[in-house]
Image (tube, rainbow, N blue to C red; front, side, top):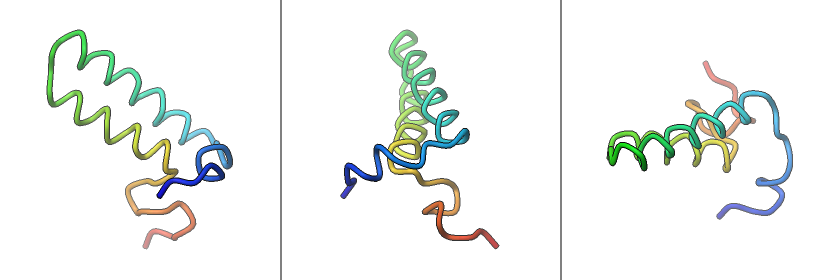
Length: 63
């Protein structure tokens, strides 16, 4: 479950980039009626809102 604290704290540059990429991909998906762009948008927006990345939670170090 996403908590309010997760949504409102720790907004760093990469998290903003994921948010803007998700918004852009969602806009393209809506304009072009493209399902693949919609899936990519959902992925980026999920990562931005939950503060996760390719390795899971940000607090976990990638090896």
